[in-house]
Image 1: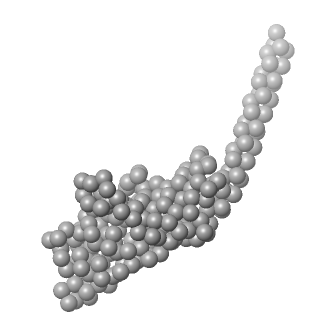
Image 2: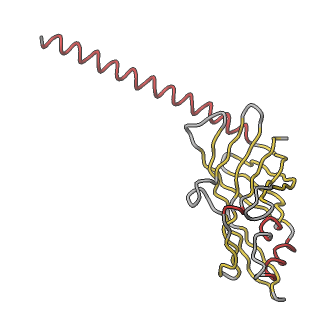
Image 3: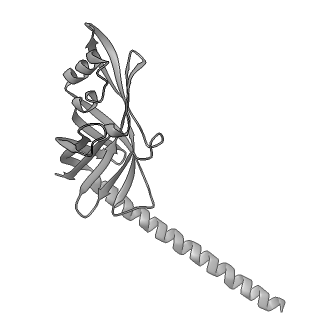
Length: 200
């Protein structure tokens, strides 16, 4: 009887080890294929930024945009019009609003993390860095900082890369604008900027 149990236990252990090894090999293959798809994201993109035309409105407008996936962890948004943020600043802040409009464009660096359990499309999380500007307000240069929500603060800051069509889409959420360390503007969901484009 003990001999039979020993045989059964040995067989069971061997089967468990085989299953574990097989699962590990499958997972390693999955990660290898995922890495190849992430690498395929690298490059320059052209597309549009879609935004809500007015608060409490379903109507959207768009502007042409370009950006680059520099490496596995960085997306560079180039020449984003500051108008897209200024338009959401309250009219009670006319000088800040005008200074933001006059700034023209900004570049935004976005750090990226991935959902390693999703492929085709790839799912990624956004962690945009703050943008620092020196803008004249009331005739005096001021340190102005534009902050964005990241995935830890807003789980809607997500993106997807469609491997077969080399299309990418992601959502950028402006959070606040500070002047000399003081919050002068805060933004809500309707300030969302939807990026969509294709690899060149």
